[in-house]
Structure formats: structure tokens, C-alpha cells
Length: 101
Image 1 (cartoon, rainbow, N blue to C red):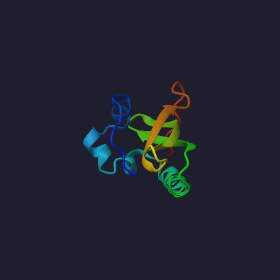
Image 2: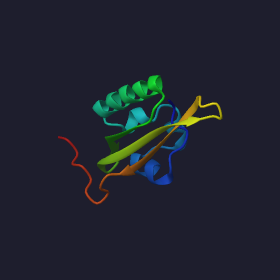
Image 3: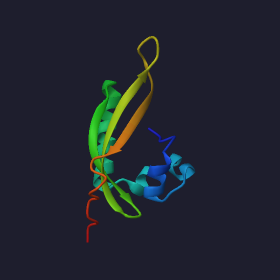
């Protein structure tokens, strides 16, 4: 999958432009372990053509924040998956996760 849009709040938090986001930007702000976990979940979902929910950490210019992400397949009239949509919300925006180290 490829990220094609990030809202201004996400872009500001992670400190990148939308064009960087579209060219693999998730590698810049997903926690490394969570990125592998998310990629595995996404590959499983793609093969089964089902959605999933996951909680991950986003690494931004101000530290880390927990984020809940819901990923769902887009289906055409015949039921075939034509794309994917993911929506994320902060788990608890008033309590950023501590920066390791």
C-alpha cells in the first residue's frame, strides 16, 4: 500500500510534507517495530481481503504518540477490492508516549 494523503495535523506532527508522505514517508514516522507489525497485518488483510484495526506509535518532532488505525478495503460493484482506506486517531492526545532513551 501507499499513503496518498495525510491531513495537516499529521504532517505537522511528523514534520514532513505530503509529497514525502506519498513516497514512503511512513518509514520516517512509524515506530520501526510497529511498522513491521503493521506491514504484516496489511499483507494478511490483503490476502484475505478483510479490514483490520491496529494500535501503533507514531514518531514525531515532539516525541511519540499512540494512534489507533482502522484499515478497510474499498470494493467495487462486483465485490472486488479496488483499494484500501486507513483512518487514524490519536489514542490519547493529552498524554504523548515518552521518547525512549
